[in-house]
Length: 334
Image 1 (tube, rainbow, N blue to C red):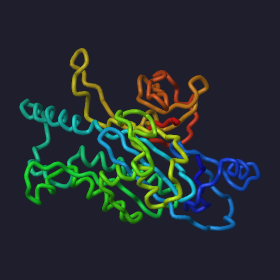
Image 2 (cartoon, rainbow, N blue to C red; image 1 turned 180 degrees about the vertical axis):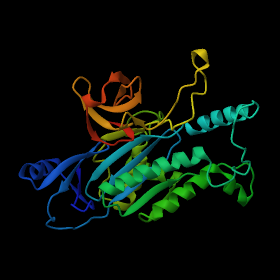
Image 3 (tube, one colour; image 1 turned 90 degrees about the vertical axis):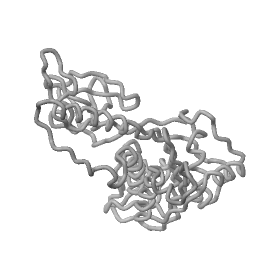
Image 4 (cartoon, one colour; image 1 turned 60 degrees about the vertical axis):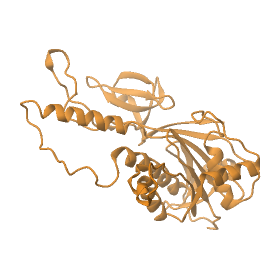
């Protein structure tokens, strides 16, 4: 895996080999740092040259998982398999049910706003495509991206009328996504059957198990999409994966939906834990690298960065050494 390089003004340059990056850090020419699971270097002086090669990002959208590949003609820099945001629709439904139930009780509540529906994207659709856009913006800070190649997924419609497409959340979501990608770099849309033809050209097969953490699940499509623009390879030169999964933050709400014993409804939600932002990466003497979770009796919880499993919920904040802000879990897989 190549190491992303940025200059002292935070502008991305062409990635370099890990051996060269170690040499730069050793002699003081660069400073190493982590950027949400990817090790990068920041140059401390003006680079000797700023020659750029075309860097293309292939995107394979999916309902449960999706693939991203950053590739140039000579090398494949990064393959990412990301979990999609799938919990928003259910949470919006729970909110609607509880809000309606409060309106039947003699209790203070805000007035109903019946004209809220139909404005822009649905919450679940917008959350899905915003997650893809966040990954793209993160990659744009690490690599000098010149073009995007996206598999253009089609919406299923019940009728044969042209306007049926405009009522599809999928169609509206991808149009919103394409418009924002165009603000970063040009976008090339490729149909699904064309992606299959590209795979067949190189003799690559996609696994039936799309939830598997393997290169052939989603990144095989994102790789052939990127390679269709850059060229340079007939077989994948890098099949190592960076697996990322978005952290689920519960925004602040008035109280728990269900009361505890004695009818007590304690406060719920929020994105800070005793002064620490939730999701932040920290190191602990016992648990090592972890991220910040919730709060219990003036103690914070620590979670495993790979599995998300809670390690402990009785940690003093001063026992944690803050490293960086973070918003997803990550691990590597070959």
